[in-house]
Image 1 (cartoon, rainbow, N blue to C red):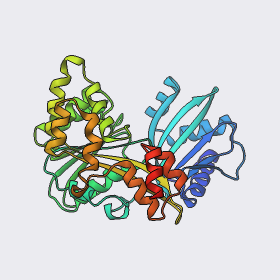
Image 2: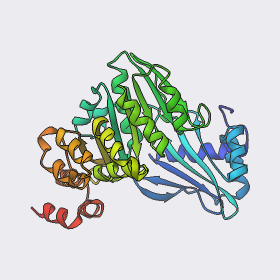
Image 3: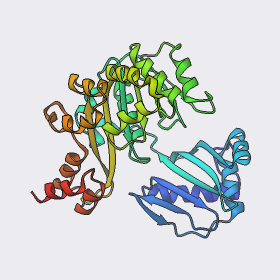
Image 4: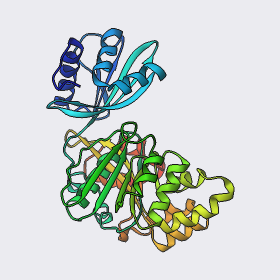
Length: 361
């Protein structure tokens, strides 16, 4: 891939990405028949540029994608890959077809890993980077900041320990530089055929810490739990909105006859669930996360073993002194600190009626 635009499509693409970068956009959408669009602080904003033609968008896909990724796009009409725009940022890219023409969705990846202290996260999350073993899950919707939180946790460990860290990603987002740790980053497709395959082989590569981009299927989930059980620290993500749903999702991946066994294994290995929801700030430009935190105390482990995960919210509420926090409590705190609007707070709440009463108090 050329480091500088070598054709008109490349030049036009870089122009759009430069505009998006200067606007602090998190995403760029290039769809045939539409003007270029970008997402700025969760809001879709049109760029002051001409409507994109099918030929131009297809040429942009061909410019950004590797030969293998472009061949996959041509074959199955969908392809995921990463792209580095010189002097701007790296992007996680999905090229796809819609109404017979090419479309591109690009998620900006900051090149510099932000420190944990800069992310407005609860202090307890920094404490989790001292764990010697176990499973830590960061959950939330797409675009809720899961990758950034995990990257900041990895970087904190990179600056403190002399350990071997292996990341399995789709695609590689933040590019780490080995500091005190030795860090290897493997990308789905380019370096491994699947998360399950990468994780299975990673356990033979003498890791101390393993980051699995997403626990997408039963095989990956089972391997991640086994890795945590055998003394590794495993970090991963799930697309769930809270801690109790996360526990239930993992259990439900297994056949009914295995669920009691996996409850016991999960109870022994799970260390924490961090569930994030991003909000647009009203006090200044930018985003801020509301974070639910579940720490696996003996009481929580018993609830998981006994199939009483529906009681987890009560345990979170009664253990704030340990650093646990429910989503609605975190949202209320952001509201009372003048960071988010009342309307957004109630709209994103787990229990809107209850939160509305909290905000009046």
